[in-house]
Image (tube, rainbow, N blue to C red; front, side, top):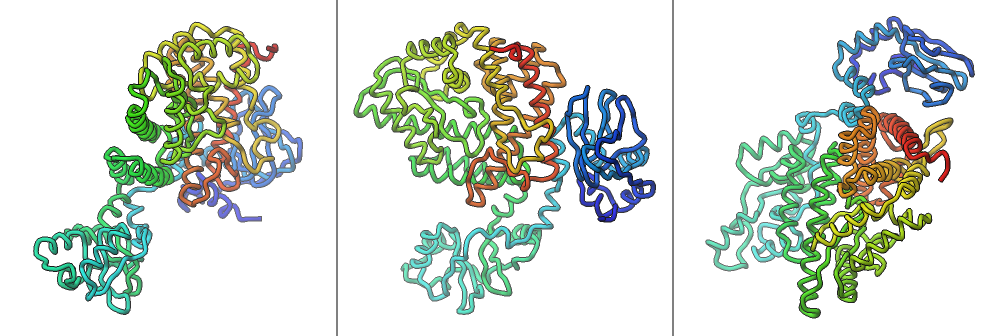
Length: 603
């Protein structure tokens, strides 16, 4: 059996404690075994202990219903409410920590206390921040220069001609070339600045590099802290450092590489400017690809979904708008002026909640000329796919004649969906009730939205609410324990967005598409109680954070799969704990929907 101190030190948030603080716990620590079926905490009882499970499993029951399961490395009894009881579901061993010792530690250790306070208040974002807290200064002292080298070194010799050196730099897409001897040891560096000196003073492109290079090259060892590189660049007022290993060239880092470690958003700013300055589709594609990688790095450094969603929306919207402008300009040469139309987005893009992996969900509402509009839809969708926004596997795109119609046909379509509530029509409503205009005549969009607000029925609301409760999160008897992986979109994000959407439709603000904004609006009219509302917002952001991290990791590792499938063995213990709590919140929300719309009485 692992000694208590070693066991406790491995568990967050106990890992936040210093050795003398853990010793405080151990001074009065007790161990107790419970047989399967044995009552550990009775209903209404407030124990003098906080329980840490060493082995086995404990069920938490509320009014006779299993609401949670506690397993190895998890605690219970700290926030035990009067209407809950704890029962051993199998033979279980627990460490019993004196409550007064636990509370003393909460007073001593701010991080430890804040973790539990955030957990009790369902502030899931703060829990993640606490568990991954790391200052910029720590990163700079811990990170090594070699980690910033992203390309193999581009080198030449002192006798290489200026022309040949410039060609190598251009072909490799670099702003400098390291001048080496036969043993790959640096003797100088030729930068873009040095090339400008040649243009001003040089005589022939065949002149040697040695006449214009900066020498000696300023070098730094690959295992040196990045902070040293930062100081060296500042002290010398230069932009390039040659990175060496045992005296031989490993690569080159720039002041910008170091700056990005200080402030990761720097790369986003630079790349976003590049995107905005793009003159054609190929330049947009290049900038967009780099932006996705930069965003993925930011996510893995701790940026959150709500922080990034506005930026992601702006980037995706700009790419789509610019693409449509280019295609419209090309088409008007053949078709003449196109009829009025508005390009709309559905799904996560309509809700301004797209992640890096977001595919296309779009449609066209127009005032006539079906042939030209269908051609526009096909060209734009093909171009967006080329740029890096993949096509929708379900073909919910403006290239599909079903989703490229004049406004009157769209009105009739929605009327049919609301009146004839087949499973297929309910699915269409769940897709198209999130609509956001991106480009074109917004009056066509507004005309359709007014029709939608007049067309829905109480029966359609019940069917849509039922759709939001069909896929239940894994809670109850087994919960996550029986699963190797879980689809967080199907089991968490889908029920939340669909449930919130139907409440927004009922309340008359369906044209607000963002889930968080809809929840805040529902809070204003007090349709959902405040505790559930706040918990749902926190849980929804956590799921989107997890989804964003999952895809970012795959993107950077070159193993892009579904961003929605989370392998439970690969996520952080804290994330697994919060995921379990989030699913309980969504289950509670689904129960609210069933009661509010009378779903349990049948459709």
